Amino acid sequence: AHVAGAAAVVVTLSDLRPALEAVGAARAAAPAVPVIVRGRYHVYAMHLLSAGATMVVDEEWETGGLLGQAAAGIVGRPADDALPVAEP
Image: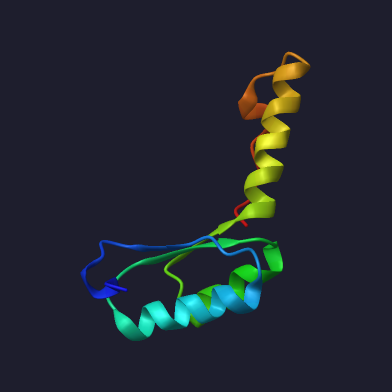
């Protein structure tokens, strides 16, 4: 792979172990390239960050927010009423 020349690396693997391996490989190949990673479960976020991920998109957090916004729309409330009150 040509990771060293990439603007960023995006890891979308759902399983923790392969995602950790991908983050480690990206970091080894190109320490300065940002690595954005899908965190399937909230408990994965700290593991991925500790492994070198620049940013983790917490799937549970994001899905919960989208579900809340959809529910707010269905019951006639503004989508902002369903936004999380704290960061993950």
